Length: 256
Length: 308
Image 1 (cartoon, rainbow over the protein chains, first blue to last red):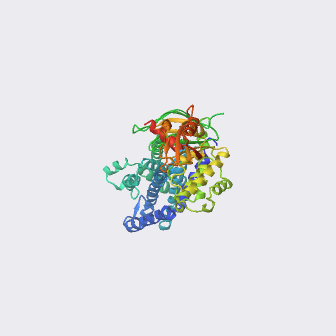
Image 2: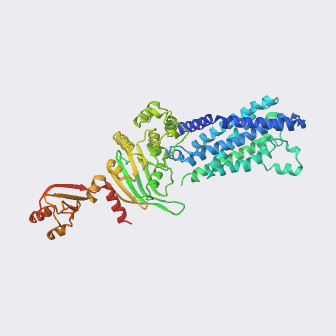
Image 3: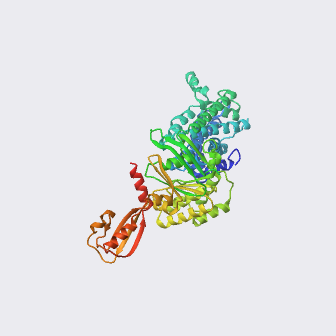
């Protein structure tokens, strides 16, 4: 066996991706349908009353926010379920008794969760293209933000999956923390449209930096500088990695 | 040659304060079948789970074929296969997929021919494309064994392998275990079925309240601690045991046709010669005799109750 147990990484990754295949309707079709509904409501119904935001049509303006919304929720739910389910049914014994390091486990589970959410993000992008004309000014940065955000939130999902002791807890953070932060992070508006007090408060919302950076990669305009967005994303990524490292070092909620 | 498993001064106390293992020392030889017996909560599963990496060890050291299970966990774990007590399977996976997954997880490249062989050996080949949730309990147990064998382990832990398995399947499984042992795999099994240990084990360890009470060759253990019964079938029934034979504590059957004498094989003298002489003096003649040895179960119950 080499320094890295690549066979194990591949086995877990394939296993997780196969699960997506089995639950295709839930994994892929459902986010696409719900995103299309967002376009109908926000893009067509409400958007028709808002002419442009910073020179971009409102329908196009909300596309990065919508992709981010799905990316965040999907990354979290995919990763948290992937690690929580073996804990719940007891099959985690096999993972714990296998010659795999925490890096390999994280690479496989987070990699698979991020892959799935990126796929969904790209499908949403393609779906959005059917509703509004889109031009991506910085495609490399767009992909960079997409990957970094997916990986970061898959890591967060992984942490939630290990922390959760029941299905209710599994849903708690995504529903009560992540979704509100995403809605309040400028997914559907520019923070310039808010009163000054709320603009200041919005700067404490980490999702703002993700949405802003991602939107910049599309339209070349953002609520905060792209460097700050990238920096905040990397800080969040590092924080999640640190927590995962600590979990495996201490065996918290995994090994007795 | 390093032992297959070497456990030295191993202790484990859970966060709740429960002391599951106390100062365990144990060596398991290559190629043997070692049965670990003990009542519920004795520490059997904790010991197995520590060796396999599922539970963090407290104090002490465990080596698998010379590899430390903590500092050299990759080498140690790749040698070990585990069939846990609970039937924990991926219900929605097919038999083939879950067994192949296990092989990959333990760092082995794909080998469809080997997976096919395992499935055929375990009579699972016909079910290879079936989802696990459609299988019976016994079949699921076989899948668990197939998963544990998928990476060609040299040491196999079977934690209560026969729990919930019917007699026929149990016998099949014993056959599989024997074949594995013949191929050089070291087998460690915990069981409630003493019959299982008696049937298969080369050596027996008894654990009780976190302490290893004894480790002994099964045959030696049975010889050492086993009591034998000598039953004499009399030519003529008797009404009672004569006074002159009272020192032998004989038991007379209800119909007066059989006398049973219990003796200790460990004792210097069994007293059989004296008994035969005394019977002759009393004019009691017998037409046949049978000796039976106490089972491992009786020995186990004796050991555990003696220490409680």
